[in-house]
Length: 421
Image (cartoon, rainbow, N blue to C red):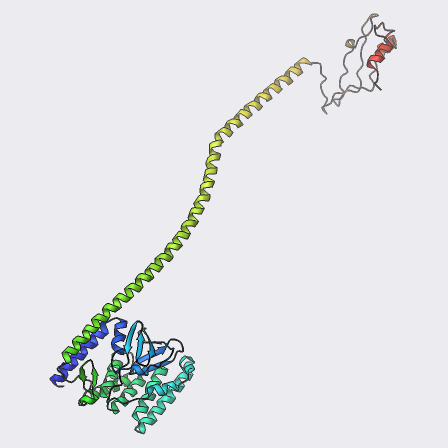
């Protein structure tokens, strides 16, 4: 490789390293702002699930579909000349001269949408059909059609080995720079290709790099950097200035991107804080309500505890009063028992028997008195039998109060103590 080619390669590698270290928006900006996306880009529709593999922004269809890049940014064709990537507007530049027009968009548009989201078996079967058509076109020398079939098969089945075949067709079309960019992209990740595919991509990359530079009319111009077809940038006096302009654009874009997410992050953080504040307020309201109910219960307990000594004092006073009443009752019972010592003693069954008692009249001729009779004694059952009580002497002496010398006549007695009608 010449010193001139080495200098150009260094410039391109510097831009590549800058792109790799940038954030995702910057990376996609640097990819899709190129006049031609040599390594290719896979897009997926956010609504239908269709996938595209493009090399130029003009291949993004105009419509309502929003496409997502492989690193998560969104692209939308807004009009004939513009593709929007979020708030960034990307101008669709003219298709570069000297690059074969591969009809990948036309081939992939013929694939049913359901094939992209349907069963894997049906999808792989359709991809195999595209590969076979690509092989047939290659055998017939129709390299552009073959390349379109291989790229469409990759967009459908997403098997990177198909891109090795597509890059081979680009190389046959004389587009060594694009082929080399595709080989490098595939070789950058060791897990994308199997051993056979890696060997082929490595060998073909060397073949692309060994091809002589194309004339300026067929060069890949990007911001003043004139690049040869072999993938090594051919020397140009404007090379250093182009790199500086690219780095300046990269720096400005990074500042713009840093400012955007910061505002968005601030707004999102503010919304989260508001949501958390509302949750905290609701929980605090519940806690306050619970604390209020607890306070009421504690107040009731404190009030009851405050009244407890008074209740205990009242209880003790009542106990003393009841004890005093009990003592007084005991004393009254004792006095009553002492005042009536001649009360009959109850029998075994607790009753006094007055049935066999009889009075004894005093001696002499004096009239009998109730005090002259002894009270009958209870029987064995503790009861006093009154049925046989007969004051015999009183009955023998007098059948009336007048005969016994009483001062109250029978009529007067009956008037005083007789039955009342």
